[in-house]
Length: 174
Image 1: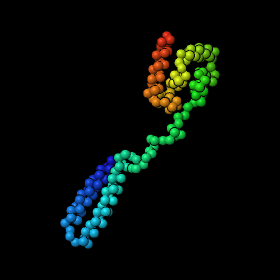
Image 2: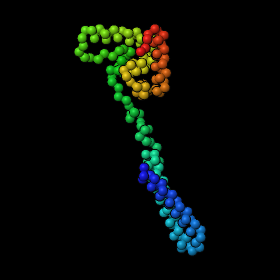
Image 3: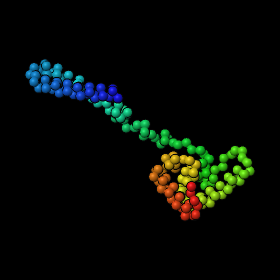
Image 4: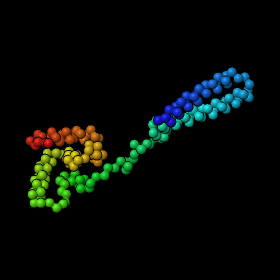
């Protein structure tokens, strides 16, 4: 931060030097001296330009004049990695089954959950189902929006509609 302050002070001093040189040029009648002062003014203006460039770079943290910053990435750079099984579930409208060793009781409980989820998903249309499944799998609104190529506000509206439809069917959302 001290460097930026020093650059700004130097810019101010350099601008004052330019003004003094302009005054000298106006007061000088000698043609040779006027040519020297004009040469100095060109040099001082280039200093001012360079100082402004450096100050802008330091304050914005971007190279001045560039049109594409890191935050403006191309489509292929904005990809969000998604578990293929979740995408397959979204496409097919099924439920996720993770393979691991489990007891009979756990299997039965999971099957019961799957039946409930299928009944809930029947109420929703395809778009709502996709958003709901990703949200149920702990994806953030931003990640859902990027995955399904929609706005975050759209994701919020779709989830609100899902909640309304599910509650209208008599289900309680915890």
